[in-house]
Length: 155
Image (cartoon, rainbow, N blue to C red; front, side):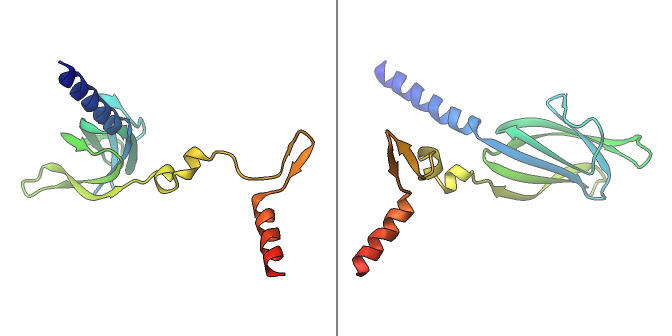
């Protein structure tokens, strides 16, 4: 029973890590038509645009894209379930396939790096080293101390 509980906690931690990461999905039309996107029945953009950018959580989601012509009338619509990877920026193009039906084509998928992934010291060292006055003692910045030390070593 104890092993099952440890395994359950481990799976929950892994699942929460993958769900907590955000991903970006971009939709555009091959011909530059105006599109409107619905994610699981929720309207994302009221005014149709040529490129729609969505910030979303990872996982399988149902996307419906409505294509409008220049006059603003509904020309076509396409609905498909796409699996969104966490921490990725995906660009999908809406294009016609050989049979003449609309289809999503993934153009590019690029991993998104957080500032904290590249520079983890920002997470832990939140204060910058600067002049601090504490109990009447003036502490110099670290850079000034190092410069004085190097001048002293040279002489």
